[in-house]
Image 1 (cartoon, rainbow, N blue to C red):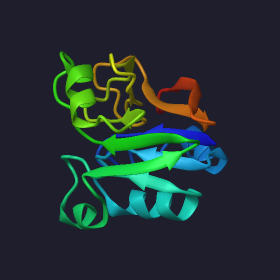
Image 2: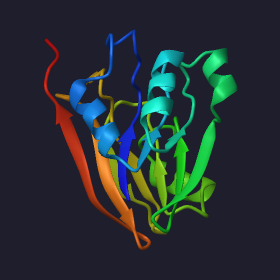
Image 3: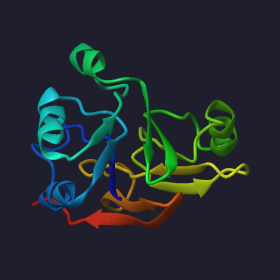
Image 4: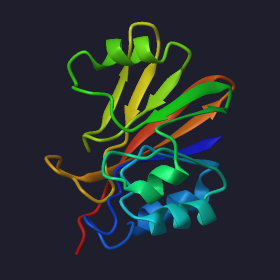
Length: 167
């Protein structure tokens, strides 16, 4: 099962639209995971219509309409793995411990908020992934997203993709 992980799209505040390479990945993915901060409902509508399966949450920049359509925390079983999705996990220091304590029943936690890509594993085995942002690099050199494969209870081929600068 091919997964596309994105977060912090911030359309139309940080970009007028999602980047072309990201849209192409949506078409190739079996499931799209979005870890919040959509900002507009049009992007949610686009992904809902285009993705084979969308698992998503709202973020701190999402208003009442998005919050009425999305949960704060989402869970799904994909490829034999228990996934959780949440926007915020707090400060980087102590993140693995806090998340492992909060989500002891998960194999993988996808989160956003910082726009900083993250890929670590907590002491108990919980894999934490932040795909960064495809539209707002903040203090990062590139805008990013992730892809991965979930199959037979294993997560493989976790790749961070750098997007070309917008023109």
